[in-house]
Image (tube, rainbow, N blue to C red; front, side, top):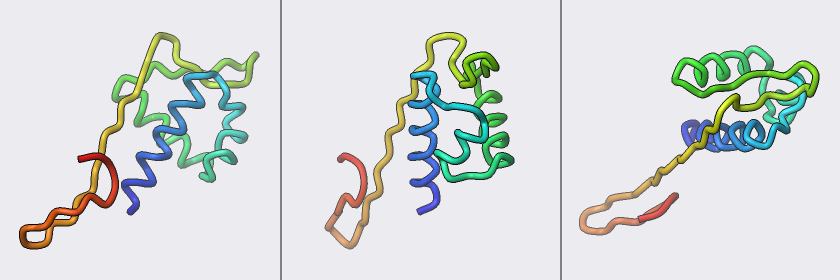
Length: 91
């Protein structure tokens, strides 16, 4: 479930940025278990859709230059004949 892992990573990134606790790019990559090139691709994607992310060299952390929040909702349902079973998420 690659998509689920990506959504969880997105939530983790958001929380770290929201509290200005990412550390340097290298430190953030270690926390996330990804390469620097993956991080910069994610960062570019987030910025391109409007996340106001900036980096402070003095504090050595990413932060939002203005209020920003993230709401991720998802569910995975298994449908077999007339039965529906929720595997992940809420009904």
